[in-house]
Length: 90
Image (cartoon, rainbow, N blue to C red; front, side, top):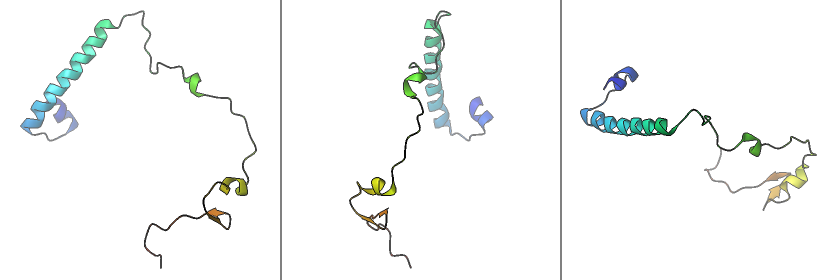
């Protein structure tokens, strides 16, 4: 397979046969899209305008340490306490 040679990928005969079929399906799909794509359709990378995801960046007062850990189930010395998941550290 020429593509495999260019990419320097060692392929078995079985892999070559399977990949040829898969690449043919991909090429056929591309051809179908090109048939329906016309000059009056603008190419898009994202169908939803990116402005939909953006909000104005407004600085706010950050939480204090006490406020940040207030919702934790267990705290000690201003930090969250979690169960040990690894062996003892020595």
